[in-house]
Image (tube, rainbow, N blue to C red; front, side):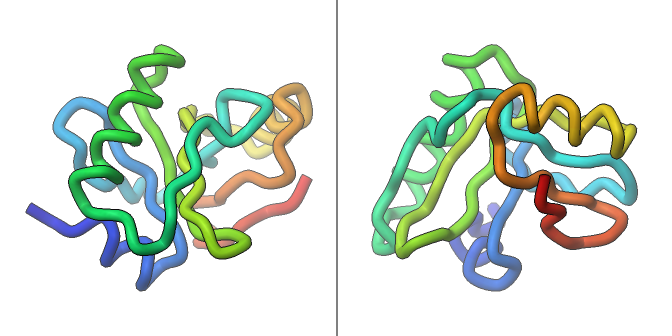
Length: 113
């Protein structure tokens, strides 16, 4: 089983499919937070099990297929996540959800709203 903590440490973040709890890395589309705030905050020294539990519970609670985690301000942020194919639609959804950024899979970068 791949370490999601290792992926976060290496890549700065990770998007997972809730069913199976596997990291996804599409070649196109955008990951967008599905709520207007970070759903869960975890300390950087959290365990793999705690991270996986938070990701799954987050996706279930908000009814999304995906969840995402990234490091910011010394904490691991966990959000329910939706993958949207259109950049314009992703930016619109991000604005509606009061998100500061989306993640572009093709660009492999954070795109600020």
